[in-house]
Length: 457
Image (tube, rainbow, N blue to C red; front, side, top):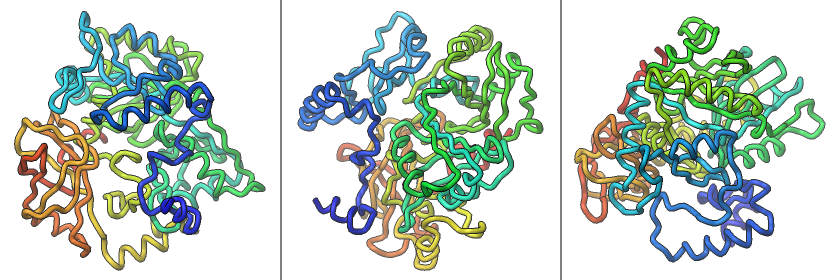
């Protein structure tokens, strides 16, 4: 009740509501059959063991990507995210893809480790079709988008901009990328669980009489994510496009061909390696997939799932909205200040609040943590200690197979006082895992490739 009152009176809730905001739901999740089946299971699970990767079993195999049958044939274990069937990991041939829940290393740990290493050392492919895709077009599109975005999206066609959308209090409403397709066209790419909220936020902040039109095109494109240090060589053997660093820089988009298919290729990464996301008109999906897999046999192209993506992105300390950051966080305090352009013409929603925060000091910081012991596992909720005092908890954790131990991110407070970078650097940190405290390194810069050399190569 208090949350609803704050939301109505102030326009912004003062607690994390990413997991209960009605705008997170896809329309099919409001059908009578879905609600009848899922509600009963969800209430029952409240009193069961809460494993961090526990999956629902009702209302499954409903929303599938065009590649679903190919993923089944490749021995994928599927999770369900925003209603999508999404490969979590892939079991070796001859092994049943079945999870055995536990608090330690679950039975798929080594499968995920192999996927993780392939992304760091070779080249991988991931079904990324669950990404939300929203097209904003019209002569007023730039004007209103640039006011909504904290970063500057008044860029040339072909540029990709990573940005946050903020409310008037300066906290985050969305975390996404905006790609300028043309003078009057922008493609917004957001996570599966925030697509509907992002669309609602746009409609709320673009006037009805503006010449700017919003279309959800999520189902119009399938997405294959090619990542790894050998991704350029691999894709260059399939397309006629020039994928060199000079011709195709980081954070740009080009239309290329793969086989017979026209594809939008975005040079971007969420794993911290050289790579491209391929946006494929749905009718060409299987043709492109089969072309890539056939060519990939020669170089060891490996399919990877969401669990590998999670461990890879946490090694780079990339943020996940609805996971480790939410509607109570500001971009400045969670390490995203670089993407806030205070001096752009016209300002942006939340600018004044962030300027006040810069002046008063940050309430907390969100470092990356790496355990010094290679055995314990981090997932969520583990208490963070600084110099023996509790200062926060892990918001998201996984195993850093490249860094050699569990890695996570979480907010660090200072008993109500300002938290500076020196406060993080000077502290001695431990993390409590199942009642035992383990020493941990803390850093405000990514511990893996902090200079982005692998991403920009």
